Length: 240
Image 1 (cartoon, one colour):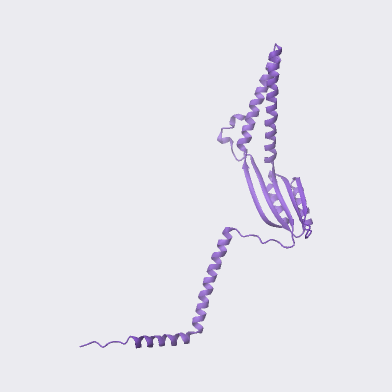
Image 2 (image 1 turned 90 degrees about the vertical axis):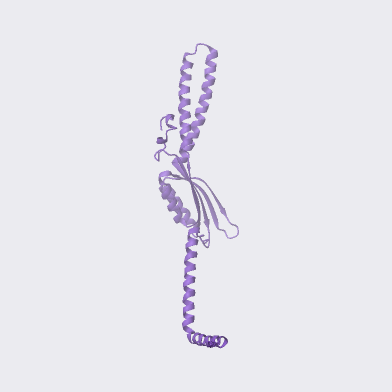
């Protein structure tokens, strides 16, 4: 983008110039802490990423370690890095976010273009000023415009860095036993349906086996029931 005049043009906001800030929160458990840590370092180096901050905590009870990392990864390698990082252990939680800052980015660019043009005009006036009063006013305006330019440029640089390098907040925890991964709602529904059908089939099969195994008793019981019923409800002869 080279001009702020496209800020209200929908056609300008395409996938190619969209400014997206990607962030991932990843929690991993590992039984081999040193190996997992080395794997993460190697993977980060392979994608030209870098460590922004880290902190390590050792549990006084069982001496297990927990590492918290803030990593910056180039946007082009973001998906590959996250996929590789997940192989360092057992993933217990993961969340991702994508913040579209295209509008903010383009607005700042437009402001910078406007302020740059204003500075150029003030510099021209400064060169042609013929009295001290005008010169002082122009210099004051120039100072104000320069301050705004630096401020907006700083914001634009920050957005650029966030877009170009995604942020991965990673927690690596040393454990003796992995925490069972909780199933998602869809998986739980599927399992419930499968278990319900299996239970129904098993019940039908059990009932069939019971009937086959006890058929003599059932036949005798049915005959006795018929005799008893006829004894209680004798047929009356029709009167002539």
